[in-house]
Image (tube, rainbow, N blue to C red):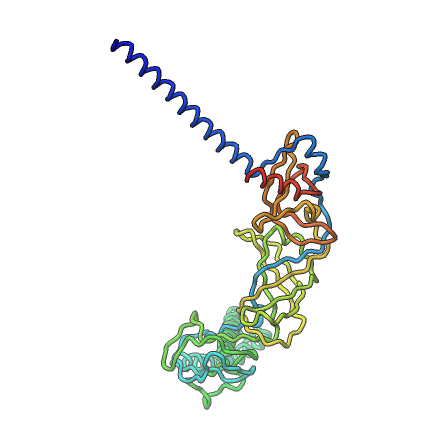
Length: 378
C-alpha cells in the first residue's frame, strides 16, 4: 500500500515539473519573439500588396551642403611679435600694461647692464685699431711693390688688416641688435642703457617683466599683436576637408554674441592631417574693420558647393521617438528598421551619413511599416 502511494506522488511531481519547464520555455520564446520584433516586421501577401511599397538604394548626389565646425579668431604669425633682448640686462624702465596700444617706434623699455658699455668700448677700440692697420697695410703694399720689403711682411700686414676689419664689422652688427647706431657712436655718447622700441603697431598682450628684473636673451619681455589682419581659423575633420574649396562662403558667430553673424571666405586649406584626423582651414573676413579679439572662440557654417553625399528620398525616413530610421529589406517579406544619421536635405532628398552600401531600402510608404511594427509590438 505504501509503495503504491509513493508511485502516485512521484508521477504527480514529474507532471508538475514538466508543466513548469514548458511554462518557462514558453516565456523564453515570448521574450525572444519580443526582442526580434523590436526592429523587424514581417508582412503577409495581402498586407504587402496593400502597403504599396517601393524600394531603392542610397544614391551619391551633388547637394548644396552646410558644414558646421568650430574654430577661433586668429592673426597670422607676422602680426604677433615677441620682444626679447639679444644680451642680458636689467630692466630699468617700462610703462607697459596688457591691453595698451602702442605705435611702431614707441619706447617699450629701457635696459641697462655693464656688458653694453663693454661692447661699445670694444667697438670703438677695434675701429681705432682698424684705422692704424689699414694705413700700415697701404704702406707695406707700396713698399712691396718696389721690393723694399719682403712679401712675408706685406702678407702679415694684409692679414692683420682684414682680421681687424671682420672684427669691427661683427661688433658693429652686435650694436645694431641693441639699437645702437655704430656710425654715430663715439667716446662722448657711450651709454650703459639701451632703448627698445615697438617694431609694429598693436596691442600689448603680455608683460613678463618688472622693474629691476634681470632677463636673459631667451626670456620674452613683451608680446604685441597687430589685429589689423584678423582671420578665422577653423578645425575640420578629414572627411569634410575633401569637400572644401578656396572661396567657399563662411558665416560665423562668437560665443560672446550669438545673435551677431560675420562673413568670411575660405582662403587656405592645410593639406596636412593631424593625429586626431583634423586639419586647419584659414578664412579671410569679408569686413576687416570688425572689432574682434584674437583667441575668441567661434562657431561657423561653411557653404559647400555641390558636395557629393549619399542620399535617400525624404519618404524613406521615418521618425520614432524623435530619431530617424530607415527600413532595410530582408529575406522574404521582412523589413528591419535601422537608425541613421541624417544631414542636409534638398529637392526631396536627405543626406545619409551612414554607409548603407547597396542594401535595398523602402523608399515610399515607410510609415506603413512603422505603424505595423509598433502595433505588433503592442
